Image (tube, rainbow, N blue to C red; front, side, top):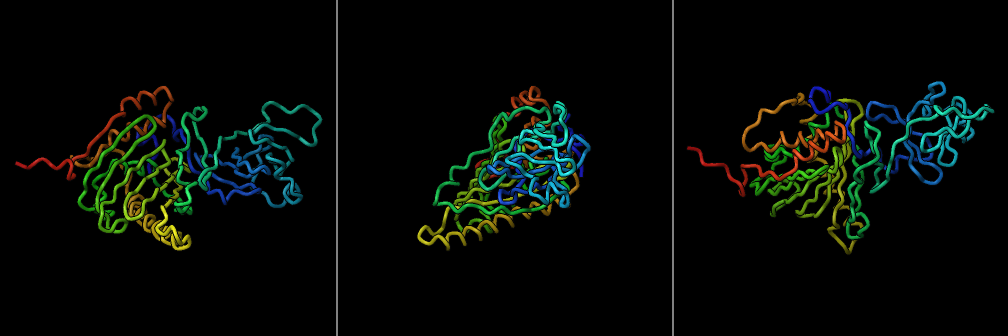
Amino acid sequence: MATTAEYNLGEYPFPRGWFMIAETSEIIQKPLAIRYFGQEMVIYRGNSGRVVVIDAYCPHMGAHIAKNTTSYVVLDGEHIEGDSIRCPYHGWKFSPDGNCEDIPYSPAPIPPKACVKSWPVVERYGCVYMWHDPEGGEPDYDVPDLPEWEDTDWVRWKIDHLGELDCHPVEIIDNMADKAHFSPIHGSSGIEHFENSFDGHIVVQDFAAGHRTLASSALLKTRTWYTGPAILRSRMDGDHPSIIQIAHTPIDDGRIKVWHALLVRSADADDRERGVMAARAYQEASRLALMQDFEIWTHKRPCTQHLKVIGDGPFGKLRTWYKQFYTTREKGAKLQAKANGHVVTKGTKRDPWPEKT
């Protein structure tokens, strides 16, 4: 495990952007303790259905707002009131924005410092996403859209919880430039092309090749992109048109939590049940393909500097693009401008190796 500083990514240990933090079904009207970005947090669903994420510790005397089962605040059903939450220790109530609304035993005005930090969250596609910014700024881009979610011809995904991994997220990001791993790890064959495009906060990988498990006879063509530092989507046009989501979120500096999901165009429009069964089987094949990478990430040493050869892919340009999320927005804009562009990696049918002399 290595830290952000060891990768020389920027002055902030955790990146700016949208991050998945939970599956929708996990969040109920009961506070749940979570940890991301080196911080203890509380997530809960208010009575209106709103999902709220706030700092875990009450500013009064430091009690953990979620970790209690015996306080009468909890036993009497007063932990969640409306969309607000009460501390189980002394009953202080905090709004979804983190402001203290009530100190039940005190006639004095509420002190200005009686507040907890809150984070912007959105709930989409069966997932809860949180905005994190070490500078405290508002979101400057949106969670990527997924119009197929409302299309009845597509089978909605189920979230695969892949657990925690002692790995810096930059090692996961490296896959976007890593043409050479597709054949030995995933069984790709006859690679037609491998190209990357960098445009602001988005990086794209266009790839086409045969695949042992996700395609039978035709080429598996994928267009894969990161929107920000942590939400990957990939469109696959093989035997079963589908859209992958892979999300990874820092827990601590050098440790992440990972999820996988697959939205699949139904293979049997006339039989919904059979279509769902086929989609679940294809999602499992996709998950197993990702687990081939996961095993490598689990056991590899940190790659703080690549030993590159022609045909590897644009690792340097990719990491320059990735650095924008670990620094100020002003510096990040300069890194964006430096990274922007299109790269064709050698060693494919479209761009063959030069003949050796």
